[in-house]
Image (cartoon, rainbow, N blue to C red):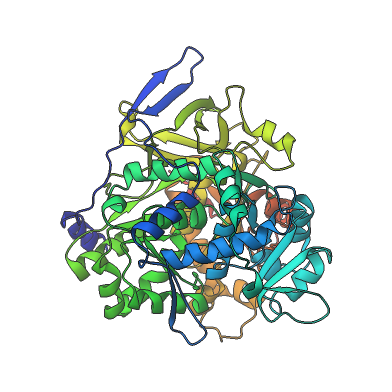
Length: 626
């Protein structure tokens, strides 16, 4: 792959119109470094639904939303049809005494009904909160769902399927709250059919829409909980609209060519909702709702969609790209359609590995004779999400760009690294009904403390972009006082052990050496061992062939790790997957390092026992030799 990657790098880059984001820097007397865009932030509307009205007038017959129906055919709605539906649903919402104190909660995932209901709520100033379906469908105790409902006190709850969500509804939704369902109402509880949620849009709808302004709460989005409990982030209209203006400063091509997007990323998170959905709406594009995801079953749906629909920009997380690559390699029709009109490959949510980058680049060159630019960014639920953006062609992943117009970046030296803090109109005013968390999240100048460390790609030229340097909450000190930067060590471990590792948790706080709890990819490990498809996890992780492979790779990793802050000395393969209910895993599938270390403290002690158990794989002393 190294040779083919080198050839791909020499290939022509497919033309795409991108803004050149230039910045200035100011070193203050207190040592902080301020970085700002040279460009001013462009104009933006007071409310997001203004864009819906604009496109319904300018391009009423243009397709806005599409989703497969039960027969597999595409069900579509134009901009004019969406506005018509939104106004009728909005009229029904005004009859229900909904407000920030009594918002709407969505339990189910992306679909046309949720899009219509969310837009209708924003149209008349009613906040809504899309909750990750994992809290209803994967959780066994529904504790997070109950906590969220108790915090929000909703006046209406929506779910797509009464049967599918029955257990969650019974466990987490009070009987006094109106329940709206698209299908399968079930029995034992009064419900409202989504089809009946409509009323003639009289003058009250127009008055309510006119009253919606920049400070109106559009929605509550919950953080994933990768470094703590999920929090209800207030999202105002100003945040959403200004962020789209920021995005357009770099993505110039969407203003000239309305984006065509095929997307599975969930609207319960800011990437799929505020970034992707709002991008399509703002620029009059078309969104094909992909009901797939990066799982074997879900990926088949994604592949089917991408074989039919050629996107102009493709959004995914690194694991999604990893899962897609084998299908692109094996299916010529798929890759020809995928790359046919593609202008940008965008990744966020985690670091993209170099092998994944190289593989996608090579596939593009072999298919269409051109490279497709990779872009990324830095942001969070609290930043709407875009705060830093990369709009330049780099030869490798990792560059998260520079502050977009309207955003100020303050870099503060913290334990030898640069902590990123952000200020701008895209930043949340705080957390709903959690004032103590709001106070902790901002510094004395009003900069939001995102919790990430970054470093300059070129210390002499900030316009060359910044690099992600880890999550501050995950890092720790060894007993020697040496800091361990967890994020790059974790990424290096996963790449080194590919394809046998799904994730890893790094231990070692106040210890002499680093150790690791490893979540193996059981399917890949089973294949390595030549075991039957029904082999139990305990038998797989105990297999001699697998243990020898992990020991050999551990020695090789140590040989390229010169210092104690990067050398993993022991590891233990975990049989049990990470738990959503106890907070080890977020609804996005990310691992909460601290939660795993807390709930598996006995295993950590087993790693560090003076006489380790046979389950612990240890570094050979010869691997430490210079």
